[in-house]
Every structure is written in structure tokens, then in C-alpha cells.
Length: 501
Image (cartoon, rainbow, N blue to C red; front, top):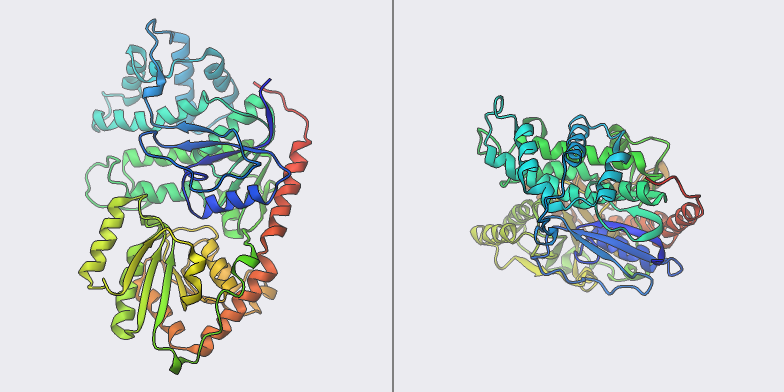
């Protein structure tokens, strides 16, 4: 019999192959529970990229598997064309469920996909899948490009087919760290293995995918060159969005418990169909000893000749590095004595990185703004006077907690839990005072004003520094928060098996 692990993490585009806040959280969760035996299914886009672990894998993490969503080489071919008419009826039934976002009859669909062992190539290639695709397109009423419809179908359905037939490790608990494809796999695990599913959402997956889809140039959109959000999405963008919305609701339905980082997330999950009784807030935390006492007390303003600000995060559109660069231009023009560091991986979206570098060149900031790539941020924190986040979407950024723990004020756009982290969540928390300033989203002027206010007022910097250190020590101690997950694991590990499909 295959080995049974305590917990199987279901990870999409994160640990251990992609660095970032969520991956760091996963790594700290595993290392913080040496008594729990972890494995994982890691969902990645394609094997054509060079995926290497970015973390030293803990001893209690082993046997992880990888699903490449868009690989077609591993599909195999069935020379006998084994997909029969009854099989295509199953696929058609799945489409009807996806169209209505009603997954009441998902168990028989999952059972059919797994028991019949459909050759995935025959669900993508061949006469019967082609006929189904044409029927779904409905050429008599549809004037959109069939070629665009074909590729949209391919890129949305192949990952779903792969997830439905994926090989699952045996585990006592399955824990999805997002909805989307990881959440779908968690729902399949719940149905097939009969073991509990837990869900943690750092950012709301469907919201973040909507932002990405609305900005994507590779999704066909009729009649416009521009990009508009949500209510003006094109037909194919809307299709992608509805699929991710449906996968979110599916995950909420099958999860025994749903954990999120702050009240704003909780309300969004409930609005998207999550049972309020299932949803619980467990904020992120950090190891205080890693960041305390990194930074010496700031000298009086008249003694400080140069200032440094830092942006910590991936160089990708959702982090809106361009707003940070534009804010740096304003600060440099009005203040002059500042250096800015963009600290984070640059390889995830190479085109966006090139655009950011070009923007630095056009604004003549080559001597001011420096891209460091991925670095050990603790080596930079002692020299920083402020940390800046300009993201258009965040959950509960670790960088604000790290910076505040080190005594560095933060400037952050008003997204996710940034306001709670900077201004406090409860009345008692708010009484500590602000540990930085909250700004408008995608607003370089507002961002620059906040940076300047902090840099030019030594007394304010000191007050914000003290407030941040107290807030993190009191409310965001990692060991206490990991203990709540350990308690949840133990509770669900002891749960009886549910009936499997």
C-alpha cells in the first residue's frame, strides 16, 4: 500500500518552485510543525520552463508530485480511439455544469473521469471532441472567431481534464492554499479519498485572476484595443473569469474549514458563496527574532544626509512597480537625497521587467532606482528609512510585517490587509498609532507625498517605528498562529472517513 502522509498541500504556482509571500508562508508552516509529515501536489503551467526548488526542502516534506497543466506531450495517444459516445456525454455533462455553475452532480463526473481512465489526448483531439467543440461554439449564432474560441477552449479545459484525472497521494488531510486548480484538486481529493479538505486563501484567487485576465493581451477580446476591468470584459475573458468563479464556489462547498487573513477577505468569500460558519480568520505571522533589532535608532534629521526606500516584491504587473518608479521620480525631484531599491525576482515576467527598466531610463533615474533581483532582505532593512508597496492587489503582505518588526515605517496602497497592518485592526490595536501611511491605488503622486512625509519628519518616523514594533510583537507572532493550524490539522486528521466516489 502507498504511504499515507499526514497532510497533502495542494499548491498552484508557488512552493517550492516559485519564491514569494505565499511560498514563504508554506515553508514556514512546514518547518514550524516538525511532527507533521507533509507532502504536496505542485501545479505548474508547463515542463518547458526550468523549475528548480527555491527553498531548502524540510525533512518532514517528501514525495511531492507535479502536474503540468498545459503539457500535451504527456497525454499519450489511443490508437483505438477509446473515448466512446457515453464518455463524450460525461464531458458534455461537465460542460453543462460549468455553464450553470451548478456542481451538484460533480461526484459522478469525477467517478467517470477516474474510473474510465479517459485518454486525455482523445478528449482534446479526435472527431468526437471536435464535434462537441463545434456544438458548444454554435456557429449558427456565434460571430466570434472560431480560432480564438478553439484556443480558449484548449487552455481552459485541458487543465481541468488533467486535474480530474490526477494521481493523488494518500493523506489524512488535504490542504489547498488557493481555490482555482488547486481548489478543484482538493475537491476531487475530498470526493475520491473521503478525507477532509482545508482551504487557506491569502489573496482571493478569483479577484486576482480577474485583474490578470482583464490585462492579458493573449485572451481575445472583440472590438477594442484597450483593457477594462470586470463589467466590460470581452466574451473570452468573461469565460475565463466564470470558470475561476465556479472553481472557487466548488472549493468552498467541499472544504471542511476555510481560513483567511483578514475580515475583508472573509466578507468577499461569503459574497462568493462560502458558508459563513466555515470561514475563520488566521492572520499571517513572522518570526520576531528574525527582524527585531535589525535597525538602529534613526539619527536626527539634520545629521542624515541620505535616505533609502525599498520596494520588496516580484517585478510583475500586479505589484505595480511602475507606480513606485513614478513616485520615486517625484521624490527625487522634490527631495533629491534618496536611493530606491526594488528587491525581488525579475524573471517571472521578463517583458514587464524590461518595461520597468525602460521607464527608469526614460525618467533618468538610473542613478536612483536599483533592481537587486532576489536578495536577503534582512541585509537591506538596516539601511532603509521606509518600505513601499504599490500593489493593486494584496492579501496580508509579509513585507509590511517584516519592516514594521524591524522598526521601518511602511507606505502601502489601500488593498488587502494593508490598512489593518498599518493602522490597526481593533480599537486596542489602533491605540498603538500608525506604523506608516496608506495611499490610493495606482497613484504615484499620493505615494510620493506619503514617502516625503515620512522622510522629512524624523519625529514621525520614530513614532511609526515604535508603533510597528509593538503591533507585530503583540498580534503577529508566527509561532502562535502556526499553533492554530496544528490544532486544525489534528482535529481533521482524527475525523472519520467520508464516503468516497
